[in-house]
Length: 282
Image 1 (cartoon, rainbow, N blue to C red):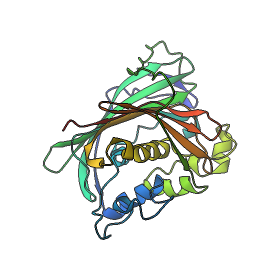
Image 2: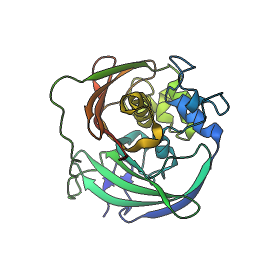
Image 3: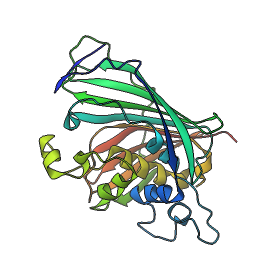
Image 4: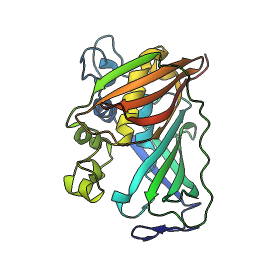
């Protein structure tokens, strides 16, 4: 199946399969933690994520680091017309501070959303012994590539909470946050180059959606026992961009399995929606 895109037809993506190996070090997991705001409010409170040699703080890895290890989507045309739509990761064991995985990725569906096409991809991460460590499901929206007659995507199950959030966590986003986060591997100039952002119709570069996703996952940890090794599943829909220098507010509702959450910007606009963070059973 193919769909017309802003720069020509998208290739026949469904079933496209890629395979790669990825190794990382303790430095990279620390850099990721800094990229999603760890230690900004109080450097002493998150040393287990931001250092590898602090007394009494053995290094741990933020669960959302799994998204960095997932495969990039296939080329989808002009990057100014591509938006991250959804991310869902499932961890079967905690990620080590340093390690390696073999990642296989498959494009599983291409949906016609009218104003664009939704490309869905699944990445499976396996350790050197062949054991599955994590699965990452990712959806990308290509503006202007709809109208080819395909089926619409079904929304993932999510029951909107009733009543006000039980918890609100406010965090500042550094003006240079996107420049710091891009060092984890996402060098899309939409997040750093004002010219490219302008071509996309944006007033200035926006924060990576996965940076906002990582902020939320990190800030929610204290609500679920503050043990990153127990996090089994995190997912959210990217609703609107967040800008570096803004603030974000995580709104959370407790559930027996973890929390439901949304994230708003400084003006109250929802930037992440339909969020779930679930824990592994004890």
